[in-house]
Length: 542
Ligand code: G16
Image 1 (cartoon, protein in one colour):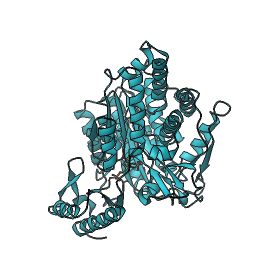
Image 2 (tube, helix red, strand yellow):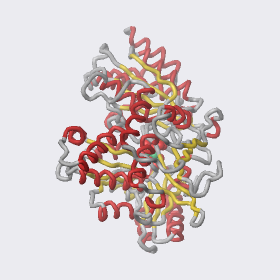
Image 3 (tube, rainbow, N blue to C red):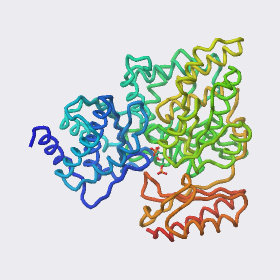
Image 4 (cartoon, rainbow, N blue to C red):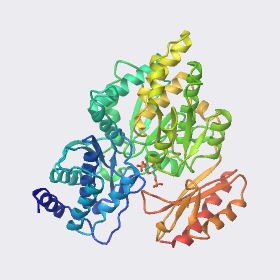
């Protein structure tokens, strides 16, 4: 046996996978109780090295996070060179590699992949990696490091980062020194870029009043504090950071954060919501964002991913019109089945923009958004961004303006395209984007909320014995399996006004999700309950 193989075998013995488990690269990589992840993460490290070698030594990212999941969970996912999610075909290689029964079959499959994909195992390779604040992240990062060392891959450990920062660093590493350079290859470079683009996009407009940011006691807290230092003395941005305690890992995502706000449809109980104050929540790894306020008269009001999407699409299409680029650029919006029907109607009928639907998972939305010159994509849960094509960015920077108004629109678009993270949804960048738009429009959250009325909706989590029996079709809007379940859902939906409902297995949690919307709150709640019962019946109650 050659030396290189011996090194991999020896290292693999230090990081065994737990027998009796089947692992799957899901919506956002492998995600589960952290006790099960050491061997999985080691093998993901091996695959990331192979991917880098396959792509001529370009850096590949590995992020260790379980985002919105409870503190006991963790996860690991691979990031492609431009900061996008791992190419789908490789997800199945990852699943197979991770599920190899023992060290020998692991090595065998590793070589099989190398030979079928024509990967030269002696070529150079690089992997950059980071982790969120979960205590288990530290040992999992060691598993990645050991895999890289054993397979002779250069590794750069960025330690604690938000997920979008790791995506940013991956892209910066691969574009450094080229005309496509995305920024300085450092965390500081990220803050500097965001700060300059925020100031550039505001173009002298004032951010109105205080913004409270709930960081879910995750990595977003310390990173936001750090970012704010880069604005000091340059712009007046009054931010109060709350739920930013990362020293007590057990409170990560507890009764706080974007997922809590979206699913419970209420503000985190702590700190006590201040009536009328503009507030937003990040999730545990700071890639999702939800806005809301508590009105002294009407109570809680949420502005979720659909609202952020329509706000961005409306602002950008107005600017594109003002810049006289309407005929040159195709703007489109990407949504999933979770999008509120009223938002889709607003975008297609009021903004007159096309909407495309994909399955859940930013990897799908990102891909579809790339088909437009300006592709706005957000999941209702607050995960998303806006992608600008190279042509669009060239036009913003190089088109000769015919009037001061056109110049203003072009300059704003150019700065705006720098502000919005082009690699993945990013709570910090998205928050700055929303703040810029509100400042330009001189809007409060109430003004923003008045653009359309959401259909009342409800999202329910249903624990079943076997979530994998639920298979979907039609961009997850219908169940193809188990037979009979969709018919029952259809019959149920018919009983309510303007109603829609669907069920699907989560790709990040051991549960199914049920979404329902209808003309009234009572009907939406009732429908969600009925469909949840159907799901429990077909999936076997836990
Ligand atoms: C991940 C994905 C999102 C997806 C969410 C929930 O988010 O990146 O695209 O919407 O999981 O997915 P599922 O319904 O399949 O569990 P995060 O923020 O948890 O990484």
